[in-house]
Image (cartoon, rainbow, N blue to C red):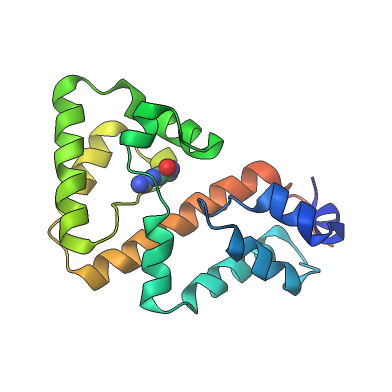
Length: 172
Ligand SMILES: NC(=O)NC1=NC(=O)NC1=O
């Protein structure tokens, strides 16, 4: 689908197709629809980023809380969204040995208890070793640092999800 097609979508289809570019936060997509026509995919992506940046801290933490844990209960129960399942499987989260799985669960819990929102990372950019390393290291950060870092990761996930939905080689 190219950006001209995106711009022509009624909001129902716009949200149906692009509503999960930020995990389980279709309100973001529904809100930015008002900004069409988007001159390019990059402009649409910037509109999403600006909407997120304008949220209060509670709104940013809310976005993070909509993300399933890596190798967590949603993966175990098969209830991940299609996008999240692909991302988690691609980074080896579905193929952890028992030691890795229990370390992941322990560190995720430690992170959530410290910050009140989950550890979020763009899984498609990391392998399982690096994810564990980042989770362990980021547990030591301050809350404000991790809120900002988590949102940065959400934007990377959003960028990759948009790339897989909308052609980027043409501009209006
Ligand atoms: N907690 C997370 O980081 N979750 C995820 N990262 C991804 O890239 N996909 C997810 O589901």
